[in-house]
Length: 160
Image (cartoon, rainbow, N blue to C red; front, side):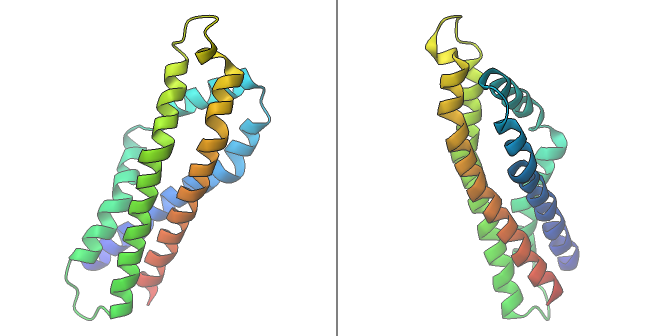
């Protein structure tokens, strides 16, 4: 059971790290080239589609599987493996804290700006983008680094 839980921890963090890396290295640089109205619309549509069942399963697994792998007693687990799993869990939880405390509120504000009445500055694509993009990218860089770190730590625990 412990081996399965650690494999699921590595798998879920690997999937999530890959997802965030693709955003960091491909999607956001491509969207950065769009004009303000197109950028704002594209990010709104992405944010509507991402939080679905498959994503949420992986997102929750990123914290749940390392926690379970850490808590399930394992005969023969070295102290190094134990601390690597714990460090991976901490990095994954910090990733979630950045996501929930940083990216999600910005996504929510972006969605709300779509409902602003015509002519309201709160709905102006240039102002919306200025309030969103730089901050969202900053949080995204931090959470990407954290989940890549979590993946590396959990992988190291699995191969030792």
